[in-house]
Image (cartoon, rainbow, N blue to C red; front, top):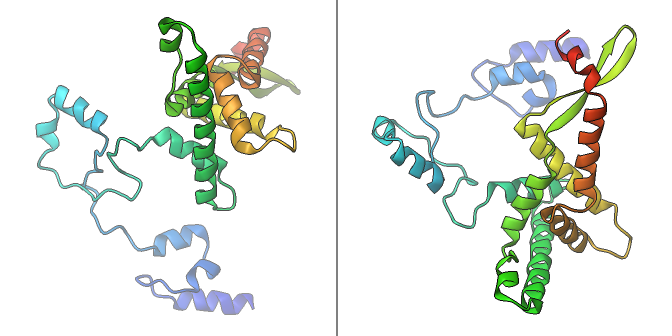
Length: 238
């Protein structure tokens, strides 16, 4: 059987893909056979966000790239005011088994619960100053919650002399964002059976936006552990 597979692999032409290639070739071999993109490398990626376009206009770099060829934008690349990359990232983290529509519905229901709760607080506020402090936009609350949940340090296990030390060190922005979203979803899933995901997720976002709750406490505990293990920080350079 193995000899037959090798013979079939040798017979496959390098300029063609068939339905049996993914099952018979390794990942590296499949990438070699894969069809290249229809656009050359000198084609630029589209700048579809209005904020990025405004920065180019302010920095006077727009005339330099105005004449360059540009690839067409992807489906998810849009300049719509309703498009938020962070919301899409959260939806992708919520999604399980490829059910993105269900994940989007759950996040939208959580936003509805946040909106309903904040409007209720807004009408119960007695003074205009108190009403001005209440944020009604669920997306802004999501941004603030994730910003408050993002850790600044992380513990890395480093082995020295047969002993594993938990060494504190800085964390990248991408990893910090990932941990913040992960902790919010883990805190949401630690719910009672009678509480649904949208309600619990809305409560966690509101708590994190107010710099309270389980996620913020988890971040503070991590920072406290990093402070306690700062004597091992020099192991990062040894």
